[in-house]
Structure formats: structure tokens, C-alpha cells
Image 1 (cartoon, one colour):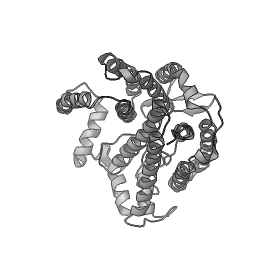
Image 2: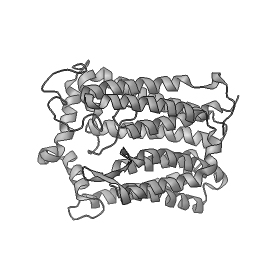
Image 3: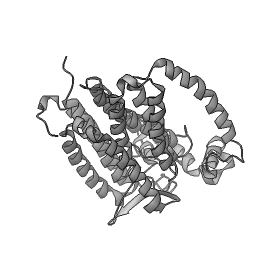
Length: 367
């Protein structure tokens, strides 16, 4: 469970990038809504402590319980639907003894662990139809449960991370090409069906968000949040208006975006730190994802590579979705910006994931 490691193998650079991004997030959260800053600081302290502890546990020992991890993930998501707390029309949280947390955040990490071991065990059979179909069934279970909350953005990110893991697990390029040949026209047909007013594939509010994204002037009551976010990012120009500014026209002081410290934290960053601040955030997210990839490249076994690659993909895709929504590149959908947005469950979950990657780095393949 615990092993002897060399301090020289510890990837302090990865911790530095994470700490720098999280501290920057705390500063932006404090500017957006000072009531949440102290709790985010407490969350970071807890997250760093958990990260260090997890980094010392042998990930290969943890993966021995991969079926238990999968069952626990499914149980957590099912518990949300049975006993969850509804907030703003979505049931995504569980309240235990006054502590409220979002299970889907930790489930992302649990699924990365599960599929890392699952595909390692079946490395020689990954291109078999049975293995592919069964893995699709396994990922479909949590995806359906997350969609029922409803949480479309999280389900999309989980699906994308799964695709990266199965590809890195050794899926044949021929199979990938065949899947793309089938999926691309299916996706086009599906989108054309979804855009019909009487469709039943997605919820009406989700369809309305797509319409509001495409034609914001026709849906001002739905698109105002995203349009205000775009204006806020642009208003910061090169250097921004500065943290904790008292400009009444700012996105936070004017209350143009409700709860700016969560899903639209990038709008506050763009307005107050400008283009330079936004670039720093994007660069740090990229460096963290890149460092995970580099660690995965030197992992001693396939499961280590898949854990590090899965975390890299999770950080990349979740950052991409969050920033794209804040800048109008994607329809409005709620998801946190890793290590920046307010949310203790999200922050601690990502720290756990980074801790696992650090342990992969402590057990690298020697050249």
C-alpha cells in the first residue's frame, strides 16, 4: 500500500502549477464574492493535504479494488437521484450531516481509476468486439445517471475522457476510423432532429439554450447571462480593470451574472485581469494537463499511463468547455473551471486526481 519513494522523483513542478492556479482562483473568487473566499482557502488547504497523502499510496494497490470503485461510483450517482438536494432545478448534490457535496465530481476520478485497470487487464483483448461493447455498457451506466440529474456538460466531459482512455489503452486506428465513419453522419442527423421543435431527445430547456446560443437576440431572457459574460471578458481589454474594483458596470458589482464565482468565473477573470490574466489561466491549465501527459509517458505499467492521461484529458476538456461557454463558443452549460471556480468538491476531487498522477510519477519506468 505504502512504498519507499525517492524524493528526486517527486514532481514538485506539477504541485507548483496547481498551487499557482488555485491561489489565482482564490483571488478571483474573493473579488467576485468575498463570502466564499475563506471556504475556498480552506478547501485548498484540505485539497493539498489530501493530494500529498494520496500521492504516497501505491496506485497499483488501489486499482486492485477497481470493481468496488466502479460500484461505489454508480451507487453515489444513484444516491443523488434518490436522496439528492435540488438546487436551481437540478438534483446534483447530496447533503450529509450538513455537508453538501457533488458526487459527479469525485465520480470522474473514480471512473478514470476503474477504466485504467479495466483496459490494462484486457490490454490484449481491447480490439475485440466483446470488450468494446462491454466497456460502452459500463460507461453508459454513469452517463445515464448523470444525465438524469440533469447534468449534460459533465456527461459530455466524462464521455470524452472515456474516449481518450480507450484510445490510449490501445484501440486500433482502423476501429476508430470505422467508428468515426458511422458517428459523424449519425451526429449530423441527430443534430438536425434535435433542432426540431417537437423532438424528445433532449429537454426543452436544453434546446432553448441552443437556440439562445445561435440566435441570442431572439432569446434575450435566456442568453443574457452568456452575453454579459462575453461583454465582461471583452471589457477587460489587455490588462483588466483590476481585482476588487468598484466599477458599477462590472459583471459582479452590477449583478449581471448570478453566482459569478462558479461556472462563469472566467468572465470575472477576463474583466478584472484582462487578456493577460486569461492567458495566464489558460497557460496554467495547459501546463498541468501537459505535465500529467509527461508523467503518463514514463509510467511503469499501462494503468499508470491511463490514469495520468485520463486526468490530463479531464482537465483539458473541462477547461475547454467552461472557457468556451464563458466566451460564447459553446451553448450555456454549467461546469466548473478546474482549480479556479468556487466549489470544494470540485477542488478536492481534482487534487485527489493530481495526487494519483504524482504517485504514477514516483513509479516511473527507468531508461
